[in-house]
Length: 331
Ligand code: TXA
Ligand code: MG
Image (tube, rainbow, N blue to C red; front, side, top):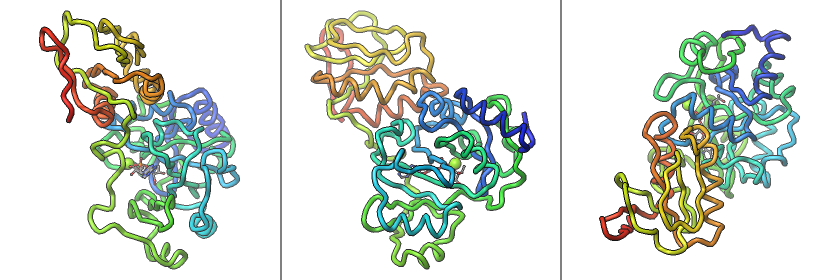
């Protein structure tokens, strides 16, 4: 459903967001698929609606007067300078994060991407919502980013509460992303704010030679617990006990005998619920003192692909039951 971005439409949008739903939100770059950035379940819904094959970190959008200390740990001088020059606008800054930001937003990274959009409708919604909104572009995975409310509605209309119509996007390409978490700012994604303008303000900016658009979510091994995690291969009927002091990350009621601790991603097999729990349960098992973690794969549809992708990236290897013993194979 498309709603005009008048007083009534904005009230509806903020109500939907406050109740954990996702909406199509106009920004000056592209339309975003926005949800409460501090609510892991709302963030899990974003991944589900987009059908993203993996958990790429998301950008948190903030109002002009938002107190950034609520989500970032520290702001280096370089970032201050850039914010002063270009915010609100199409510039995303990667900064050290606060622990208040859900792992699902950052893909478990210690940094968070922040953007203060200039579109007046986005600003008004953010101000009234009074918190950060996570928002990737409002398209299903693999499709073009939408630059009109109609394009959002055509692709995602049946999966979101509403789309606010703020007119066609002024920029039409996504924001430029600059990593300011270390001493030397680095361009992670060229975007709607030209590098020349950034250099006018910042001087030196590193532009990585090869593919500058490598998302942390694409790395082979980027969110691993300290405790080795093994993903189960094959289907299992009867097995012997797991070796002593093994934690189990279960799904859909599946069990193995002998686990010291069991954390169940979703008893009823709901993939959004599983995604919602994934990072926090891995972390809990990691901190519990078990010697190894064994994880079931989940079905490869919807969010399942993302969950399995994250499990694989977090894993030290695979484990299988040979018929008479457990076999752990490091990768
Ligand atoms: O213009 C835009 O930026 C649009 C509008 C809706 O604001 N949003 C957008 O989001 O393009 P998305 O999800 O398509 O791109 C976010 C990208 C990720 O793919 C990743 O490369 C980068 O931002 N990113 C997010 N968090 C990061 C982090 N902590 N460190 C490095 N890169 C990060
Ligand atoms: Mg996108």
